[in-house]
Length: 110
Length: 114
Image 1 (tube, chains in turn yellow, purple):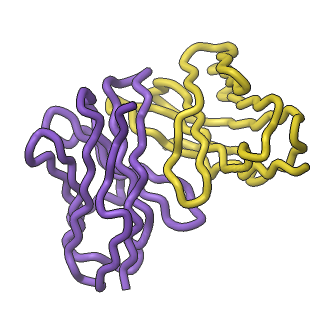
Image 2 (spheres, helix red, strand yellow):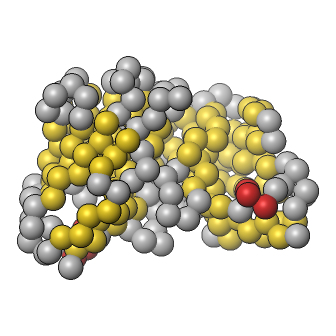
């Protein structure tokens, strides 16, 4: 089976940096995705890691360590609109199905 | 920018009734998925579909569920006899390839079973 853990909630201040961690256990690993989900909406793609290291994309960066089963999403220069749930998802198996964590609800405050 | 579309956005049905949820994946994508999200819970995989057949399904996807790609553009999820616990948001997703292929999600259909 697969197990994905991430914190339930985080709070950060506008303009700050926040790191959301994700640990996972899986077999047949194809890659790790981060999605953003606003309440009542669909997940939208943020980043993808398949090799160890850091992937940077504007204000968002994601890191992967396959040996440790660990990833994090780094959000810089936080804006109020970044208040959302951030979903860590592991792609595995021949069909590359995504297994999601429970999501981290981020609240950005003034 | 191409996007996945889903209809209807909301569906209310009586327990025991059949429902069909419709999706139009992005046109050059080859892999199609259904996920569901019960209110307040995590997104759960239901089924993946490739080359006109199911490639993987979860334990949730029992005999009450079926998928079809009837005409080369639509991708449907049918629930034969709905139960109260089927109430959830159902998301369709598609990707052009496996592995690095990012899955693009549709806006979802909110299914309410009374």
